[in-house]
Image (cartoon, rainbow, N blue to C red):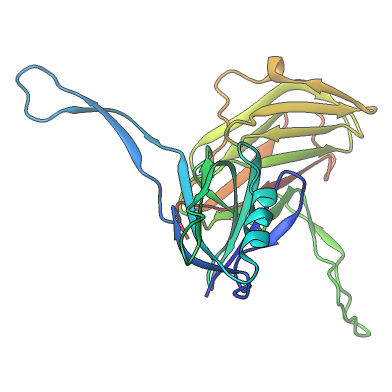
Length: 287
């Protein structure tokens, strides 16, 4: 069993499945991994070719629906839900995955003069991967929070609220099919400078050569098509691209576990002076 919902440009959510009195979904294409364009070139007398690059192409989701009940009214309702050329969000859920993907309505077609009228909706998704609806949040700090609800404290058996880690480390698990970016929110509680965040699994780092003060928040986005780094200080936002250290990498989380840590060149002696919150969603090639 599966559930298929559409959210149109106006924010209206419409479920196509479990509505057999009006619509019967008889086919959905484009739910498996999309095609890949593999670019190669020949070289003289050498057999075969050389691989130049590979890129996953856009996804095309095609939905076939048989209209039931009040045929004309249900067809016209589809016109309002699937506005041609407008963006929409597709929600798909089955036993193992609950995902979403953004696309644009390409066509809404059908034969109005057949006994059993069927409509076909074609949606182009420029970003080819399905995104998990659940966002994963992971915290990296010298202070590890221990206090959780619900809780129980016995007499003579105290419960620590937090502990100070000698070496800050966190692990983020990418449970998707492909690598994905993340959003790092860095909260500053005392003056620090020379911030570097390390992905020790991939031996990469992202650094910012600037002094930050208590109350500052840095947002680092490594999502494809959204990459950027900004500082929010005193209610003002500043682009920090000019302060990014040479050799920095816009992190992509490899499939599986990714270990992160951080350092500062000065001002980091106060535990908890830097707190980093990672937010990411798993990406899937198919459902």
